[in-house]
Image 1 (cartoon, rainbow, N blue to C red):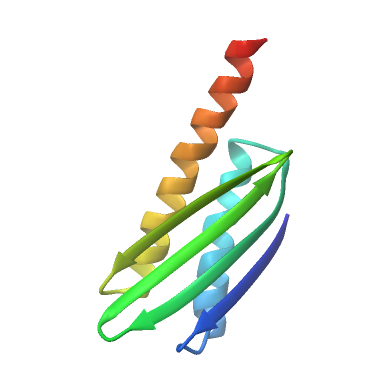
Image 2: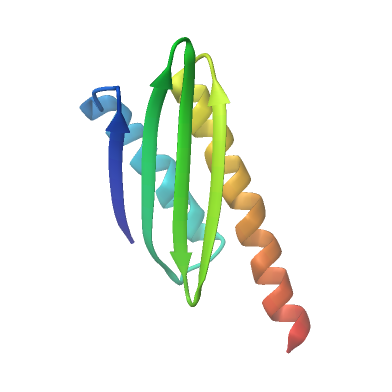
Length: 96
């Protein structure tokens, strides 16, 4: 899985990048056909935002989260993407 991490109005440090990559790698446990993920980390005043778009076979899953802490925003983001991946996988299995 290819992961692109960018920041708007924030410097993406290597620990932040590693944390984000580790969290997104855990998504591949539920669904193996993830091709790439694009993550945007941004700051607006005191609110830390994390947004992601994950591309899987023919579909894009989008999620976003806000928190006062960037690491908590990344955690919430991966939880949302995890739920969406499980739901997508269940839909594929139910149609067959």
